[in-house]
Length: 260
Image (tube, rainbow, N blue to C red; front, side, top):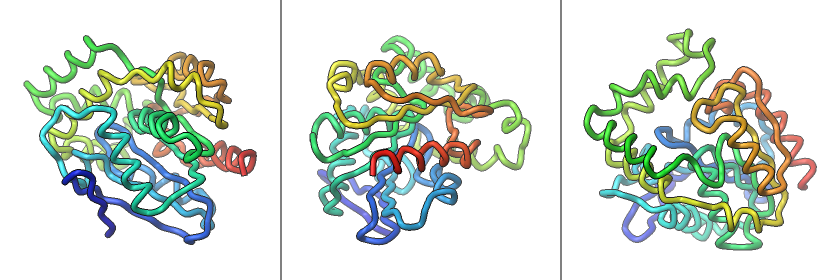
């Protein structure tokens, strides 16, 4: 197990693959930990250097008292980059991880050579929407909202398969409440539209056909903003890397080849 500290916050990191391999860094979504990438990594080449981590408030990373800011989440990622001495990174960000990726690319030009934005946008939702989400979850807890969140995360066939669905729902409800709400606050205030429109690196945007959190139309708008190629993953919701790992990997492998 590898840990990196950023201003007293301990971050859980996995750094796998050959040291001289192409660096691909993954940042996961709200309510998940780095295991959300496991199905996808099984489909990718073994010659990549794969770096993934748990955001603050998630997985095995520390859970400081919130609210968090997007700057703090971006700085966490950059702290990991510096500790591992990474460069020429292909950054793959899922949902809030995509916001983090956009922030990293904007804050440190030249560090990220290519960017994959998965089920994300330059701005996700509105302040009022996130304030309502925070109040509702704080009042009733994550367990009471698990079913509606699963509806956004997955297409119907996955939701109907209790054995497949259960581990991901467990991952959600076991997320520390302070961590979940802290990241909600960071998303609420994040607006990358100006900085992301100025990015000049190759970008690919992916979205699940049935994503109920960042819909295909929302993701397409950000793809157009960034002049990114855009693909819809059929029969998937908000986590296509879980639900349709092979299809998602096909797009990522093609993107890696084009940006080699």
